[in-house]
Length: 315
Image 1 (cartoon, rainbow, N blue to C red):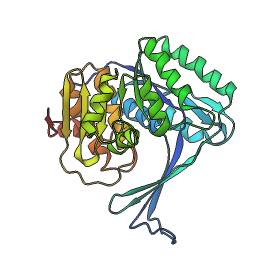
Image 2 (spheres, rainbow, N blue to C red):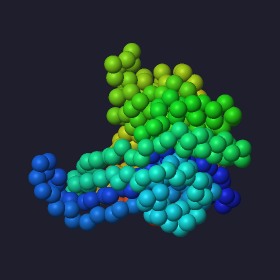
Image 3 (cartoon, rainbow, N blue to C red):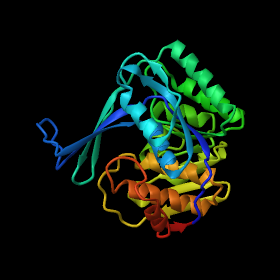
């Protein structure tokens, strides 16, 4: 597998970033005092995680969204260290801290807080920033939840505007934001199996299989439907049909950020114009290795390439 040496441009959008406080403990007991063995506090949010992985792979990344001014230092330090261009709109308040508790069994319990409140003025400033970035960028990754003040409809409107301008939008969200985003047909969506089934719940597709739900979404005009299945791998449907990737069994340390890493891998394959099998095997390997470490990032590219050759791909 040859790697792209030239800088490839991409914009990541994190509307509701977070400082992730990840604690590791043997077993989480609800309603009791739990002793954490070790913990890490790191800048995160889905789009920030994608930006970190893409930057470490070699992309030229610009990151935007909304960032609280009271605790921006850790984000600024990260962006400077990994050479990501910071175009976040600063807003009053502190960016949220999300708690992730990882048990020895690798089960993760997430406690996610709502985040900062975004004003109409900040939204207008963000829209101007997004328009300016669209003048010289063709690939956008919009990932994560929405902060207070941003509606699912506004997020969908931004996706639609970018798509109408000929941009390719990778979209990874959940709940109402996912529903609104699906309606405007992003170029790629990446729900996990639970998110996809939750989206279909109560509707005409409620009794359908994951594959049938994905096929229905594809028929609406979504070019790429990527479904992450955890240890079972990844399903990907586009105009070329289905491909499914199965990684070997990994020694799981933490699943935090594995889905974001998969999105980054899919985006990297697109930026490099790789074929479908090469893209899927690389992205699956990247995501599989992510669960063997604490924190998001590419520790050893050669290890990713080696593992990608062990990914089972079937149609």
